[in-house]
Amino acid sequence: MSDGESTRELLARYLRQRAELGQRELYLEGYTGAELLERLCTPTVAGVAGKTSAAAVEAPAVSEAPAPEVAAGSDEFEALRVEVLACIRCRLAEGRTTVVFGEGDPRADLLVVGEAPGYEEDRSGRPFVGPAGKLLDKMLAAIGFRRDEVFICNVLKCRPPSNRDPAADEVAACRPYLRKQVELVAPKAICALGRFAAQTVLASEASLTRLRGVTHEFMSIPVVVTYHPAALLRNQQWKRPAWEDLKVLRRIYDEAGGRKPGGNRG
Ligand code: URA
Image (cartoon, rainbow, N blue to C red; front, side, top):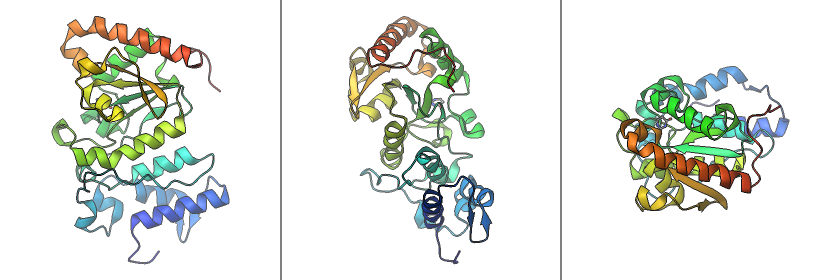
């Protein structure tokens, strides 16, 4: 690797090699695959890039960032994960502990989208692991799904400092990752949790009240909007309408040909 080579270029070469060789284990000019991944996944910007200049982490313009360049093939999802874990497209890379890519079944028929990692998600690298996550698990169970049967991710893959609202340029930087996740998972239905996720997925400025109760589409996939579990924890009176949303979600999922949940996935 030459001194001037950016982490991004290094990543692109890694992914190209991986695709060309069709191998899971890689060796790249003096780095084993594991060493390279460690470099790419080091959480802070300084740690990721080593030689990254401050300019590289300045917020991009609000227009949506280019689609991620992931290598084609069966390992596309893994390649996307590697790219996202190394992302320095916006200022959130500076303050994060880990990137929260998402988790669950990458072939799930149900994709659940939240807003952004919170404190516990940022520490653990997993989505919805705090109190809101526990409630999300119960919401999914209420319509028959185990957590490992769906894919759960967020609009933003990094935690905004102090859980502040995501900024428009951060969303623009991250949205292509969500689009790619939707494309690769290819779910039969999407559940957007809360106003922010719904507005971002649907590219709408309508209120949550207006977005709920109607089935929308994103990338030709039906989208059902419901309350964010964190909001439900604060507003018990919304649990009943949320339950109505979940029943609609399950019906839409079944009608779209989603696999019956509750079984063994090999
Ligand atoms: N809230 C979200 O929107 N996402 C998480 O992952 C956790 C809390």
